[in-house]
Image (cartoon, rainbow, N blue to C red):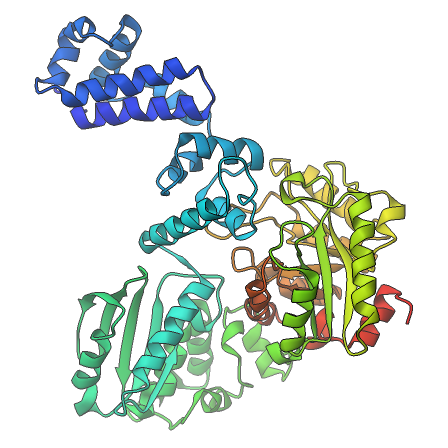
Length: 580
């Protein structure tokens, strides 16, 4: 008899998983309970479970019927169970992952899947942040908060991190490091400095005197939020933070700092292209300097600007260093003047308590005015998004009356009436034209039926863009970073349609979305498509997400002129055809 490839622990786990999947599928509770009971019974026995199964004696044990005995025999003999594999294929794999979140048992996972269509931990987190679980039967605000805390704990063991999480961790660490007077310069590098939407770790580059390196490294590894020291050296050390993200510190002499910073910032493709350019000018470029052929003495460059100047290039902002034409543009003095956060004059795509937001319109106005904004575009959900308390036609009128009252009491701030209207499967919209015409602007978004073919989804979205009352497309690919892939979509065709119809494509600044993907920014610019950097805020704190969207806009080569919400309120009124 062949040696079994499965042990008691794996057998019990398989039984428990089968019982769980049956619960998630809504099968007869007695059926799932039979598997749970069998798992518990086997767990308490001290005899050789595998031998019992191989001999067939397992069927004589109370609670193990003929059908289950046969399944266990197949499992031990083959090391796999086709019945279990078929069951696993019948549900989204993310449902099992959600069971690892405190407070999420099979019944609750089934509830969020059935009622909200949530299929992964990332989608669950996004739903919690949008208050989708707050009013769901069996949940509530405290349950939602507990789930969010559990997800945060789970993230410690993630391979990649959302950009804002890593950015905030890096800020705290650099604040700590800069208190050390031995450091001359210190800057974040890597994909964090390039503002990639997700990052693997934090890279820091610092400069100091050679004899002070060990002292600085000792200071670095004593950072109070350090979980463990991965590596400690004289020129490079690595720590693992309590948040689960690792951080490297590289120390160099100060004259080497600009070259080390450029090299560590990357990307690899950008660095390769820069080295090739240096080579064509009889120079060798690396992380230590820029060396004339045959010389061991680097050309002096006190900062990155001088490195680029030496190679006859304009300074290339870190966000653009992806080898997507930035070197050629820098050579021709044709780099765009990238948008900055202080150029934002107002925000659109903001949810209030009328749908799934947590703040009143009045509170949102106060928060926007405190940030120095001049306008706010309220855009709650339309009626088909029942799980987010989408607005009926009567509630639309009620909201517009409140906005009119608030606007009448202000002469230095404007609230624009907007809606995030659902794009239906055929490309139609969730309200008739009479209701849509009552809004100052309309954001059209997809919130359902993500499994359409590429052709169907593209047609659906392009049809919506052709509607004369649609102003902009919201979160165009539907992705949730580290949680849900974009739905299949011909983005080139979408952008071409937006250009033809003079429609705006949103950059959704929510850190879970950051969508439009920056990789499409250059094409959008070439086609003349404008964007709007929208926070998709569901809380007052969500308004702060605008800065993450600005980073993505910069990566997408957008200037202030190409971004709707950098324009003054009077121009916005003209664009929206609002009466003065």
